[in-house]
Image (cartoon, rainbow, N blue to C red; front, side):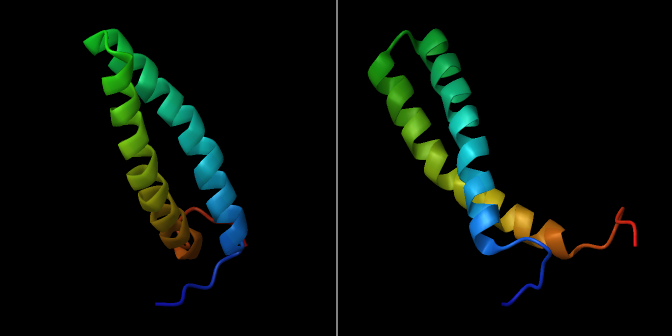
Amino acid sequence: MHLRAAESHTRSILKAISWRTLGTLDTFAISWFMTGKVSLAGSIAGLEIVTKIAWYYVHERVWAVVPFGRRA
């Protein structure tokens, strides 16, 4: 599937990575606080960074072609 969008794929990827880095640090801190285990918190954060970057990228690309709320 090819989506035409105002943003390049590279820009969407970099936005996903920068946002997910912040989110993963948050997940790590919460997981560490809740479990008291750095290794478990790291495992949780490591898994979610991969899955959420992929989902964010898909989300951004879909919204890039949705005209709702855009001004001409």
